[in-house]
Amino acid sequence: MKKTEKAPVTSESLNLALMVVSFVLDNLGLNKIANVSHYGQLFRQSIERAIFGSEHSIVPKNLDDTYRSRFIAIFKTRYLQLCDLEYDSAVTPAEARLIPQTCALLAEKGFEIDDYLRWIFESFLPENPKFNPPEIKVMCSNFVFHKFLYENKDLLKKKNDEEIRKKESIDLINRTRALIRLATMPEQTEKLKNLMRNFRDERIMIQDLRTEIEKYEAASLVSTHAQMSEGGTESSTQ
Image 1 (tube, one colour):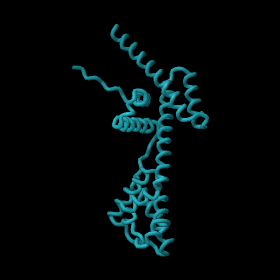
Image 2 (tube, helix red, strand yellow):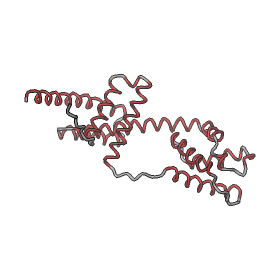
Image 3 (spheres, one colour):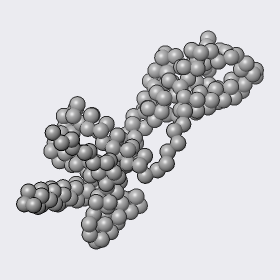
Image 4 (cartoon, one colour):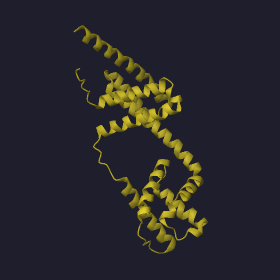
């Protein structure tokens, strides 16, 4: 049995995959099924990261170290302002693990390290003096973290809404770029570029961009299917 060679993964194939997945999720009603929608979005985000990685030279960074050093620097500055003393306690192994975990959870919720430590030193500690002088392990505990989320739930909702809109905007822009790369006619390319410019300049709303992109995706899929069918017919007649 002859072994079938796998086609190399190219930017074009990734863009086509993004278009197909987006079309299936958005136009066949699959995004109404919770589990399918969730994993479909994860798959779509994975493709988008692969496209970005193929087009940019990315140097991976150690996020844990970045989170840790930033948290400690801000904490020590705030500690000095509050206590009029230097924070000279060595960071324990447990704290070294807790800090990046807490920072990652904050980032996931759309918050910055500054937001968290500002709340701790300006709101939490004045209302809870028994925790003075503050310790990193306590400030990174589940109790303090969830109290922060509770007291900032309105801001959290606002950030979540903004994040959803941001992700949808990025998704639509990526889908537009995919269509531009796959376009075969200059006039179609120019129309798509104008759509993206108008959206970025806020001359059209996100729902208008979505409607137009879905039309182009549907037409592009029909064209791609026709080309593949023609190619299969030619191969069978040779």
